[in-house]
Length: 239
Image (cartoon, rainbow, N blue to C red; front, side, top):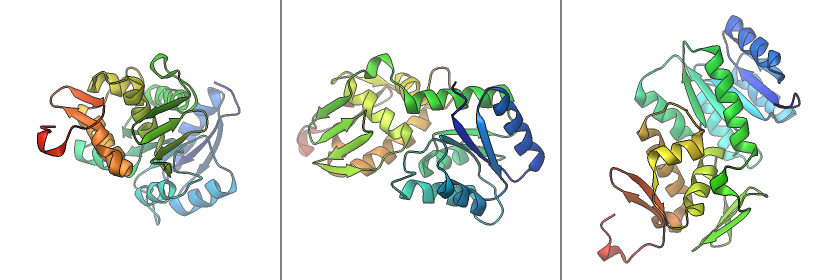
């Protein structure tokens, strides 16, 4: 991984913040670190990082609030974010993903696992998988330009997170073929990432909301996965 990849660590526990920074720097990353949400927003404005490791439970401006603000701004809407939290319940994980997190790690965690997640997310945000070689995909009202990182619905641009972008790209590139939840997890979240199937459902729900009038192109095959194809008339659809 190039040493120029810049990571911002936002964690209020000084010992953990220093430990994460030390391990990431040892892997060749450039690291900056802050202890609260307000300082994080200032640091992001000063210089945009390649990835953020963000604690949810921060003093003052919470990690949830930081992430919400990032996803509202064009400049940071697709910025890769890994959330850290002491809340390990599945519901909390789904909330994190619904807010726009690209990955979610519960404390306590293995430093080796964090390093693997960081590397995987940077690869996802900067490279292609074999399924997704085309730079421009166009189907129905949606056009996805991978090189320019733009998605339009009926020629109007929409903002997607990195994970939502890769999820849409994987479905569109499948050219009408069914993608299982496992396949979409591999495409959108990375190989060997251990998450529950419900995680993909949360991302799909968020994607559908952003797609607006094109949401019906994302069709559910119950118990299996999703397929991107033209919707049939509403009164005939059982999806």
